[in-house]
Each structure stands twice: as structure tokens, then as C-alpha cells.
Amino acid sequence: MKIAFIGTHGVGKTTLCFDLAARLKRLDLGVDIVKEVARACPLPINEDTTLDAQAWILHTQIAEEIAAGTQYEAVICDRSVLDNYAYLVHRIGRRPEYDALVRTWVGTYSGLFKVPVLQEPSFDGTRAVSRTFQMEIDAVIDHLLDAFDVPWHRLDPASRPTWVEDVLRALELPLEPPQIDLFSVLHASTTQGTEHDPERR
Image 1 (cartoon, rainbow, N blue to C red):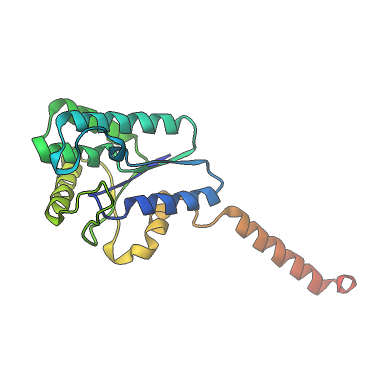
Image 2: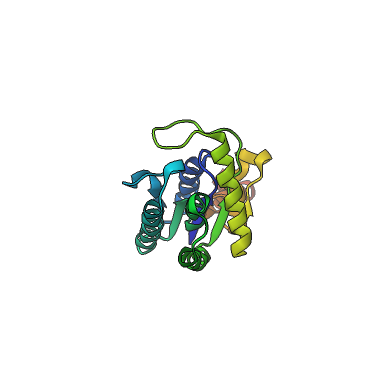
């Protein structure tokens, strides 16, 4: 199972990755997070990115996902190939060779969850802080989702506290570990037995 939170920068994808990872670990799944690879790129990113930089980011993203997928049951991605590609498209336009790569690879995700823009990006040493740039990338992502016609989920801006639960429901995963229900059943059974057996009081 491979899940990706997609969207422009500064919308809280990283926090969601860690929140979802914690929930999946409670379900006894082995989990890894593919962190945002652009932060490790040795070439210019954000508004000054280049074709070489975006090629490095796309291929590194795919390599990290492959590596994580060979070792863990669940892989959570802080971005997908599609929203990474959006930065290349914004800068120099779509490229046939990368269209083909992204179109193929985007089909490997079990779920794509688009995180809406709720606030302007804040500076963290890497992220661009231009509101205009943030919204332009968001629009390019929407365009690419339509162009590649892939299934995806839009997280409701009005339901931020339940986003992780919304993801679990979309993936048809339990909201709580099965063991919790088992303990409740055992407790109820023990209580009923005590009520009907005077010798056990």
C-alpha cells in the first residue's frame, strides 16, 4: 500500500504524513515515510528550478518509493511524482518524456489525497514564501490531475481535524486497532459471566 499526500507547498502535507503513519502503526502495519525529496536536491528549486533539478527530484522520488516499498507494508509519501512534476511544468511546460513517466508511475499509488491551501506558506529555510507561486503550483496540480485522469481524493478544507480519519475511510482501513474491539468483547463477556454466576461474586 502506497499513499501520497499531494498539493502545493506550505499546506501541511508533512504533518499529515506523520499523523497517518502513527495511526497505521497502531494498526500493526510496518510503515515508512518518503520525505519531500526536493529538500535534498543539490540544484535550484522553487521559482528558480531547472530541468536538471526537476529530473533529479522526479527520479529520486521514484527511487525512494521503490526502496521503501520493498521493506514496508505501508509507504506514505510527502508528495507524489505528479505534484513534483507540477514544478517542472510551471517552469518550462510539459515534456513528452516526463508526461509518459508520470502517467505510468502515478498509477502505482493506492491513494492520492490532495491537501487544500488554507494559509500562506511560511519560511522554513527551503520553502518558497510567495503566495502567488503557491497558488500557481496548486492550479498546475489540478490541471495535471485532470490531464492524467487519475483517481484522487480532495480533503475537505472545512474538516481539517478529521483528515486522517477521512484517509483511513477512503482506504477502507479501520479507525482503531482490532485489538481494542477484542478487549471490549472479553470485558463484556467477563462481566456477564460474573453477573450470572454467584460463585464468582
